[in-house]
Length: 89
Image (cartoon, rainbow, N blue to C red; front, side, top):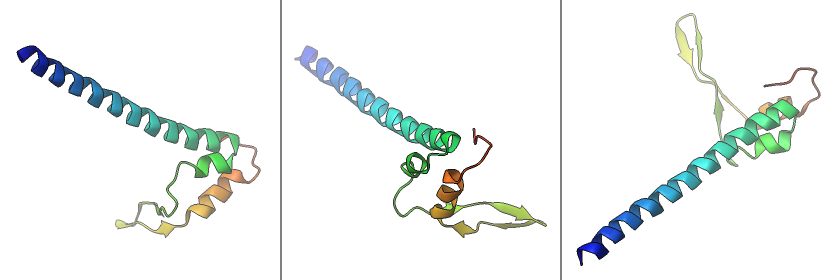
């Protein structure tokens, strides 16, 4: 009976680790898609890294006043997709 209990515990750790690895790989792929899209000017690939209704905020500290203005994702995606000489790497 102890063998079965040990085996059950061992399998639960293996399964949990496999799911965590899968989640980690999916997250890494999403981030890599964003940076590849930025580098190649591929706005479709870059957009795929964001949730449908996401908010973009930039933290600004000007004259010791901190603010976080909200912007639309569309402006950022358009910026990536417009022709430009530089590579955003």
